Length: 278
Image (cartoon, rainbow, N blue to C red; front, side, top):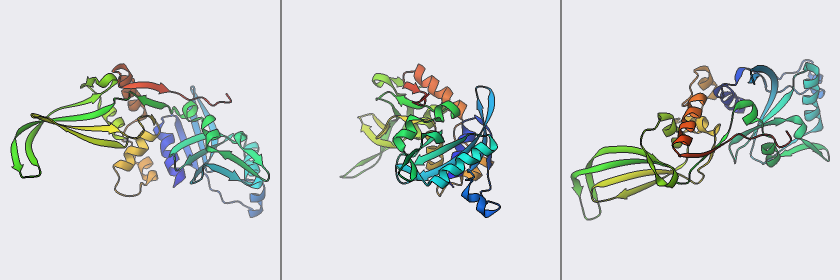
């Protein structure tokens, strides 16, 4: 479910001390005309203080959200009734990145309240509240495995198969520089990308290279989600992952490895994004 995937990110960020799904059944049923009950109640650690929020979670195929006035005003009424602010977590599935923003950024268009994905990203609170950031590696980044040829295992008119031994594993960074002493978390970061597979053969070696493609930049939030999906043979049960605390890479470990990547000139920039209206 969409709420479970976002809740997985909440706990992964190490910023959330509580996330509670809310029962959205109204008693009496007529209360639904006045109140819209959001999906989650959360406690988020913001600069050492636990702050409560309600979060309404949405995923869409379209690049815009459109809510009736009853639905939108119902969220505001619920927030005013409880004294707890409501945020909207929204993922446009074509982009596959979660945004988190305040209700006030919806604008009324004729009868409905609407927001487009560009506005959601301009006002995104994922960096501010959940420690998300954009990771931009150097263009030459890649993961490489070098194998030394030992002898011919099989040969025919089309190809030669070699017996070989693994000689070294390394990452390339700025200007193609080879870096061999690397934390395993930095390898995991690279595995979270879609990769092009390139093979280069010389008289003595075969080098298998994996280069991020088409996009070499990534949001931190996408790293654990991509890794979980890559290692799953079926649809991911995010709730089970939360219960078992199964994270392929911890938030703090990823941040540590990215810091190492910056020092070794593998990672070029680490960008924390502020809401435009702040």
